[in-house]
Image 1 (cartoon, helix red, strand yellow):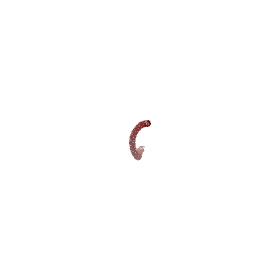
Image 2 (image 1 turned 90 degrees about the horizontal axis):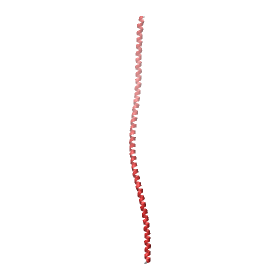
Image 3 (image 1 turned 90 degrees about the vertical axis):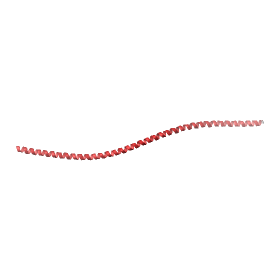
Image 4 (image 1 turned 30 degrees about the vertical axis):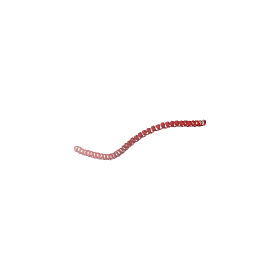
Length: 133
């Protein structure tokens, strides 16, 4: 009977040691669980921040694309305007040359007419003065 009690005592002590070891491991697991929850929470915050950042970048990208499209449209319009102005300049240059030629022709005609009038006037003057001499 004493040996039975002693055996039982040894058995209870072993169970007690096993329970103490299990309690220690359970405490360690709970501490690790708390640590993992904190890490999980921190990672969720990082994910949320990255999603917000991604959303902002996507919006910025859309604005940039829109701005680029407007700039491309403006470049096309300016290129058309440049070609139109170039065409107008060439046309104006041709018109200017025509106007200068017409001006020279008119001046030449006017000078000839003026010279003819002077010649007529000198002839008339000559005949008038010759007769009075």
